[in-house]
Length: 250
Image (cartoon, rainbow, N blue to C red):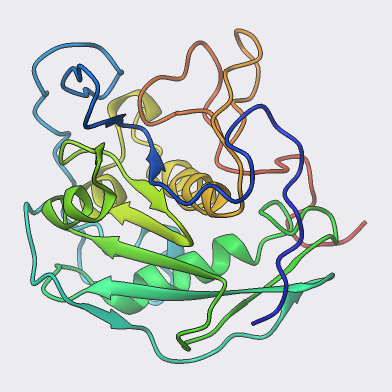
């Protein structure tokens, strides 16, 4: 396993934190029910996903497998086979993708989306400080898991994810399938941006970054803001470095 470069400075959880981190609250706290906008209220009915037609070759990678929400799946995971090229410059950080068995949708669609997001110059490459490579071994630096809500709740405990949010635990970014397929109401139907945010936010936790707040009304939300719960007046954003050229050109 290669060494992982240190995270950029931020105001959140320091590198080395191994407990679960996410948009929930610890089990030993007086926990309200998490809602889409972070209020203390009864859990809302999740937004209804739009069933996707048959996947066409020209359908964007980040909008594939828009399927029904579920409560649970098999509880076992499949590691997605294959390796990518090294994406970016700098020391290599490896990641593996795992998908819970029994989930609707195509596991390859999730794998391709994760690879596309983490390999983008706007992601955690940190302007040449890190390159990314997908692998399928047990020694990957980061593991990105897609799981049903019941499985997320179990894997993220003692953090209360309440069947709604995702979390990171150690080197695992654990993605709630219902958020992946439906997003959240305050992204106004922009599922592509939300999916980018979801992967980059939880992977950011595995790299040692904690939560930050909206810097000001109308500004672009930092990727480590808890955008699943509330935009706090910021504009939704999924990228670590949103101003970078996605082609990687200077």
